[in-house]
Each structure stands twice: as C-alpha cells, then as structure tokens.
Image (cartoon, rainbow, N blue to C red; front, side, top):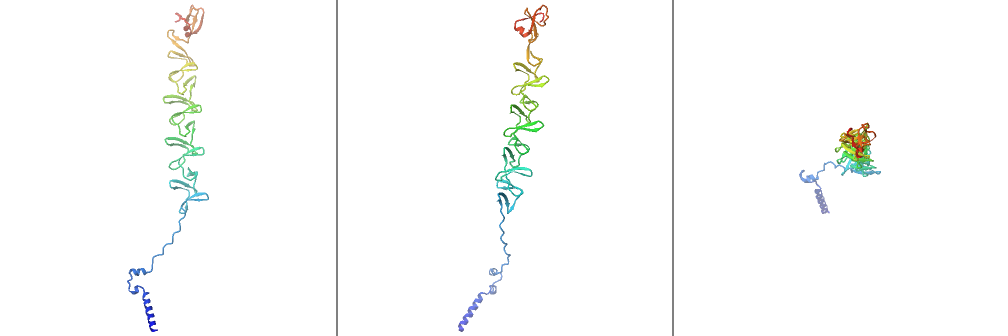
Amino acid sequence: MKRRMICLLLALAALTGLLVPAYAAGEPAGSPEAAAEAPDSSPDPAPPEEPAGPSGWQKEDGKWYWYENGEKLTAQWITDGSSTYYVDSAGVMRTGWFTVDGVYYYASKSGTLQTGWLKSGRSWYYLDPETGAMAEDGIYAIGGKEYLFAASGAMRTGWISLGGGDYRYADKSGALIRDAWIKSGKSWYYLQADGLMARDGTFSVDGKEYLFTASGAMRTGWISLGGGDYRYADKSGALIRDAWIKSGGKSYYLKSDGLMARSEAVDRYWVNGSGAWVGTWNSECGMYDHTTVYVSNAGKIHRTSDCSGMKHWSSMTLARALSRGYKLCQKCF
C-alpha cells in the first residue's frame, strides 16, 4: 500500500512538469517557440464585401436598361463592343427615330445606332457616318455628289423650289444636277454650273445660245421678241445666226445678231416685211427679180406703164417676164 502511494505521487509529479510553460522552463522569450505561443494582437479581418449589383443590359417589363454596378444609367450614350446605343431620361434603350439636344438619330430594332443612308417609310435619309446625326434642311456633299434634304430630313428629288422663282433639280438617286440638259414632261430645261435652272433669257451652253421662257422651258422654232422681231431655234434649241433657214416652204435669214431679216436686202437677195425671201438681184436690169414690171404686146419689158410707144401692157414680176422670153426696152433699161 505504501509502495502504491509513492508510485502515484511520482506519476503526478511527472505530469505536472510536462504542463509547465516553456519560458518557465528556461526558454528565451524571443525564441521561435516563444513567439509561436504568444497571443495574436493583429486586428480582426474585414467582413467579406457584399456582391456588386448587375452590370450591362437588363430587361425589365419588356424594356432594356443599362446598369453599371447596380446603377441604372439615364440620358446618355452607351458603347457596347463596336455598337452605340442611347438610353433616355428613364433609362430605356431607344429604337427608331429619337432626338438628343434637338438632333435626330435612328436606332435599329436592336437599339444599334444607324449611320449612312437609311430608307424610312417612302423617303431616304442620311445619317452622319461618324455621329449618326440626321442631315436636314440644306445641301450636303456625299460621295462626291450633292444632295438636298428637307427640314424633315427627307431627301428631295425632282424639281426643288428655292423661292423667288429659282429652282434646282435632283435625279431619281437624289443627286443634284449641274451644267446639263434635262427633259421634264415634254420640255427641255438647263441647269447652270451653279445648279440653278436657266430661265427667262438667253444662255450660252457649249458655245451655242439657247433661249428659255420664264418657266425655264427651252424654246424651239420661231420666237417672237415683240415689235415684229423674231429669232429662230432649231430642233436642238440652238439659236441660229448668220444663216438661211427653210420654214413653211419659204426661206428666211437670221442676221449676225440673231434677228430675222425683214424688208431688206441680204447680199443679192431681198426679204419682205414678213422675212420671206422674195427676190434676187438682177445686175443686168438693175433691180430685184421680184420687182413688178410692165410688158407690152410687142414683147418688151418696161419699168413704167407710160413708156412711150406702149399702147397695151400687163404687169408681172421681172423674173416671170424674163422666163417668158420678153426683152428689155432700151428706153427703160
């Protein structure tokens, strides 16, 4: 019994020695073992951050919105990849026509901003290739040609009134025409180098002259200038100068100023008051062959009807008398 008690005390003493702290057993305070046992004085770690809100496109009640870290963006342009979009003041992605600061833009059904040519309804529109802004109310140079757009942005074609009687013309493609003839309806018109329609006057085109009415239609044929004066334009519309023309079976002469000659001589020819050629100069007789002469029964041609020795006479033109073989009266010629 005494021996058992001694063994128990020895075992208890050994166990107590194992639980003594290292520094109590002579370990230096700065040793790694001591540091490992020192209490941790560092601050507690920060709590984990809550997950950020949604970013990118979000569909709500059938409409699309753009979020950045949970914040809905409004009234601004959005760039997503290579495409541009616009969200309005409510944050809704816009499609179709919309305005920003008074400027019109167009977005497809997917919301992508459109640029270049666009057909909407029955009209064509042009959207700036850089900004997408709609061209409106003016003339724009596009691809080396000019186009005119209404205040609504619709491209104009055909005749375009500029006010004050001035007009320009755009073909079916919308390109404005300069320095060319166009045919509209049954008439021809000329667009000058500045694009304005020629009207109410004479204009020079490629070295020839053309006359246009107040409505701009090119004139052809006889053109009355008032006061009995006339000019003449051939089928192409070119005004004639210094030349004979045939009209209605008769010959007429257009002088160097373009006016029709009338009641005057043209070289060896005579034109009457209506401008028609009626006679040719006969140098032997000293008169035009359309001049009225008097012929006697003796077969003589007289200048006057009271030439001595002529009892019976008749009148005709010199040309006709000569063609019938009558001879000149030596007293008269």
